[in-house]
Amino acid sequence: MTLYPQLIIDALKTVRYPGTGKNIVEMGMVEDDLRISGMHVSFSLLFDKPTNPFLKSLVKASEAAIHAYVSKDVEVEIKTKAVEVQSAQPSTPNFSSFANVIAVSSGKGGVGKSTVAANLAIGLARLGHRVGLLDCDIFGPSMPKMFQVEDARPYSEEIDGKAMIVPIEKYGVKMLSIGFFVDPDTPTLWRGGMASNALKQLIGEAAWGDLDYFILDTPPGTSDIHLTLVQTLPITGAVIVSTPQQVALADARKGINMYTNEKVNVPILGLVENMSWFTPAELPDNRYYIFGREGVKQLAEEMDVPLLAQIPLVQSVCESGDSGEPAVLHPETPTGNAFLQLAARVVTETDRRNASQAATQVVKIH
Image 1 (cartoon, rainbow, N blue to C red):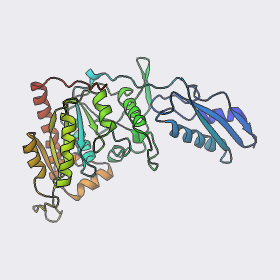
Image 2: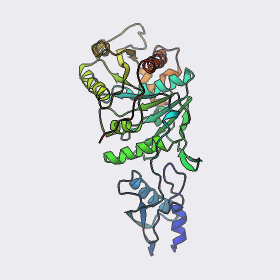
Image 3: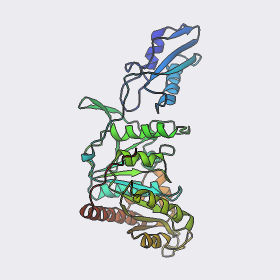
């Protein structure tokens, strides 16, 4: 087989920069240094900065495109350079289009925060609200699986002269996740700045439209991502998720303190006690408090914040999350009803917060 430059260029035209709808050739990212020697091909890709969050994935995608459209036998060598090129830059989102921004947080992982966020978003949509959901967990995105849209690939649309990402919509919820743009089997090894830039793109360069509730499924703990969110969006309030056990409650306190810190000043709408008790399917009237009893309820009283819901631990919750049918879609079940009641309570507490407190300001940290 004889290689020639146009073969390589045509293959690279199939590689699109996430969120723009444009391929890397038309964006001017392929430098004019293409070299072919037998079955060896070398060239450079140009990026706006060395920390571009999509650098590694685009290099791999370019190599894969050449192997797929030219030949698997091609030896590909790709260099990267940081220069000024036409590239998507995070823009400032239109805050006025988000009536309420709600951060769903947890002090530690494994307490079911993403399950609560997904069910809350769908519950709000079922109550007639316009809802957006952003999976902010850059390193462990789970929303694509929970909504059973793992194979979805958001496209871009030109709006007012800008290429904007169009969110995936399901169950009445508009949703975006970094999981749509990375290999699900490959760990995301990004530094904090790279992750924050990717998150800003998903916020500022997406066609969210007018939303009554913009739900943020934040990573567990406290991190650069949380700082990026409060510096980018005026968060109306936070919903803290925890299990009743003491080790989880200790971390929940840290999450509460992070939001109520005087520099951040985000109100706590309330706490959600997840896995409050275990109810086996064959004994629906029995409750087994395997993680302790009413620990979150006691914490809510101690911190003087509302207890929004107590969600029981039943096998169907896990199964519904894995199958892409969150429990709230079945409000006739005890768990589904609990999540729908949670959504209604969040609406109540948000209205109360808006009536009694000034709007949250974006945090400016110098």
